[in-house]
Length: 123
Image (cartoon, rainbow, N blue to C red):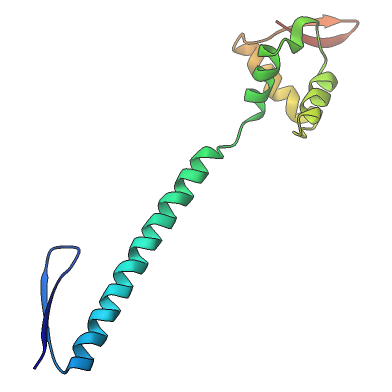
């Protein structure tokens, strides 16, 4: 009677004994499950790496990028900031930007002053 010994991923030794068709069927199933398991692990790792690469950029990071690009050389209003972000493909309502820009002012990343009754932001 044919016999086969398999070592599992955990290191356990498995001995199979039966007819030639039974042993070859079990070995084929074992090989298939091992290959599928490896493929699933590889796919999961690839998805995790892709997710890491696609980290979302927050609105405050985008505003800081504008500052680094020299956008705030002249004082800008919230509408100007919104238009600049829109040109880059990011849509934020002015109501959202007001809180974000205010937090950047509080962190002293940006400055603000009142000009003609409106707040403007700059370096």
